[in-house]
Length: 78
Image (cartoon, rainbow, N blue to C red):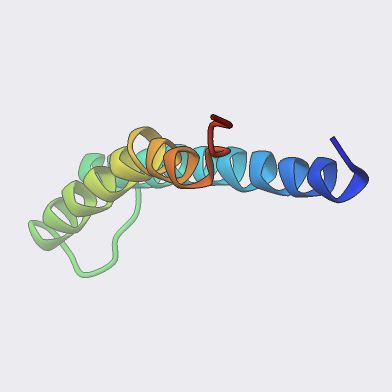
């Protein structure tokens, strides 16, 4: 593994970690909106916005890192 490969691997790991962190933050913000912790447009609109944010956050947390890891996987040598 060369230095550039190591740097690329670190950047990809950072991107995957940041994707999971942002997904968790979206889920938390969505649940706060659903619970009425703060108001954007008033109820019941905040609940629907919160549900949408939770779904996007769950997708970012669980699915997107898998998609990126599959895309970035090293090719197998024959």
